[in-house]
Image (cartoon, rainbow, N blue to C red; front, side, top):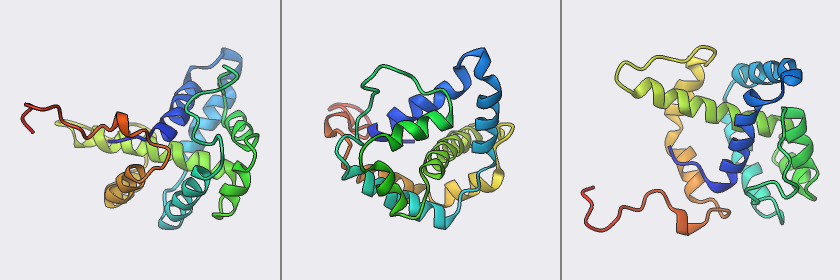
Length: 170
C-alpha cells in the first residue's frame, strides 16, 4: 500500500492516538472507537478526494511535520491543528466534510487498508474492531485510492515507492 507524504504526516499523528499519556486513555479509546465505527462510503470517498485536492492548494497544508514540535494526542487536537492552518478548514468544508470527518475518514481508510493487507496474507484474519464492510469497500476502491496518492501534488517525486533499482528483477 502506497501512502503519500501528506498522508504520512497525519498517519504518524494517528499512531500517537494509541501511545499517548495514561490520562488521555479515555479520549484515545473514544477516538479509536470512532475511527473503527466509521463507515466508508462512495460519497465519503468523493468528498475526501475533493477535500484532499483542495488542501493541496492551501499554503502549508502539505507540511509533513509539526512546526512547533508538539504531538497531537486526540482527534480533537488533530482537528484543531488542521483548522489552525489558514484556509484548511474552508478547503475541507467546501468539499462537503467537516475537518473532523476528514481526519476520521483518513484514519479509518488507513486502518482499513492495513486490515485489508493483513487479511490478504497467508493465514490472515480480520483484526478485531475492523469492519468487513469497510475492507470490502477498500478492496473495491483500491485503484482509486492508489490513484489519489499517485496524483498527490504534495508528493516528493524523489521518494517514489514504485521505483525499482536497476538490475533488480521485477
